[in-house]
Amino acid sequence: MSAHLSQQFQGFNLGVIEGFYGKPWSWQTRQAYSGFLAQQGYGAYIYGPKFDLKLREHWQQPWSDSERAHLQQLARCYQQAGLKFGIALSPYEVYQHWNSHTRQALVKKMSEINAIGADILCILFDDMRGDVPELAVNQAEICDFIAQHSQAKEIIMCPTYYSDDPVLERIFGAKPEGYLELLGDRLDNKFDVFWTGPSVWSVAYPPEHLQRVASQLGRKPVIWDNYPVNDMKNWHYLFLRAFKDRLASMPSLTRGHFVNPMNQAQLSKISLSTLPMVYQQGEQYDPEHALHQALTDLVPRELAAQLAQDVADFADRGFKLLSVEEVERLKARYGQFDHPMAQEVLGWLNKEYEFDANQVQQWTQD
Image (cartoon, rainbow, N blue to C red):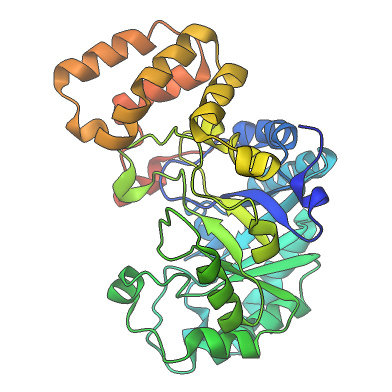
């Protein structure tokens, strides 16, 4: 695919955001992804794995020299490939401790991020308590403060309530009345806003829904698409199907579309390669044909046939519903292939991606 869709549709970002929990990608994998994304027609990549606590709960701690060097190299790699490089900062519940100390810490963090050379800065308030006074006002003020110290050309913030999904209020507390409207009113127009859709894991994005959210926020949202991500409670699934029920008209309804991939970077390429087809083919787009095309382009024929045979079981039944005999048969089949995707299937079957919050410190990125 010859051109990034962000170039075809002025002001529209099509990208990938590494924003999942669990086993992270390696630095080598992230770098190699720059070529894949550029070839497929994407225009941006955002680094924001939940594994990196120095972007989240421990955001006040600086990266090590090695981590900083990796990030600088990653930024250069994407920029040389013609893609925007982004970093997602989640200053954990900073609005509950908004004082001179946290302001000074944010200035230091922004200096660190500026030195990496990010084109896009994300300020994420997701997965934090939201039932606190003046939530929208405080978050808008923090965004303004960060923006004053950022050299990024684009800034995208994520609200604490980033979907209509009631699960957010069950976990993070009652949403303040008029939260989205007040946030949109207080946020400067230079900020874009992430939105996952009608639910955290949206299956579709109806135009009327996107128009209503745009009215509440006073700007078109940027879609954070949680397909094909399979972290946390979904670790036992592999989502290899092509994108479906996505709007080719999204560039007229939103400011961008960022996809959160699976912990399995190589297998994620299958579904990721189909999303640009949605925009390029419009009404002619067929998910089944797109999946066939993706497998044909990315995978040797025999492995492609095996994956196509197992797509439904991997996505609908998942590891937990496979019998011991089925797991052993699958291990024997995929063990025949010397290919990174087959190795990821084997790792999944061996429970290497099983999510365990206590295991975070054991994972490495190298």
